[in-house]
Image (tube, rainbow, N blue to C red; front, side, top):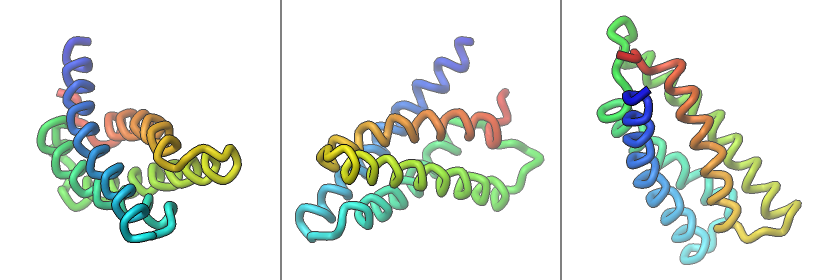
Length: 129
């Protein structure tokens, strides 16, 4: 149980950095460049996923020796695309249906996607040593 807690803490640190990238780029693209919030959310999420892959697979999860890096990356991307769909559905529902500001909605969407990411990456990508 201690290893799982330590792993979740590492995941949290990587996640905070990825969130800063995601949230900062979302606000920058929307506020400064006038990009639609859903387009901005997609771009910022994608950039943060690239960072997250590199950091997560180096510092958080243990590489499965019987899995090629190419397959690992494909699985990571598929899980991330599902996370992006969850993110954008939350963003749309929060902003369009509930009338909540997109930056506040992003915080809630991030928490939901974070749970998705940890659980699915743990199941599909972690060697669990």
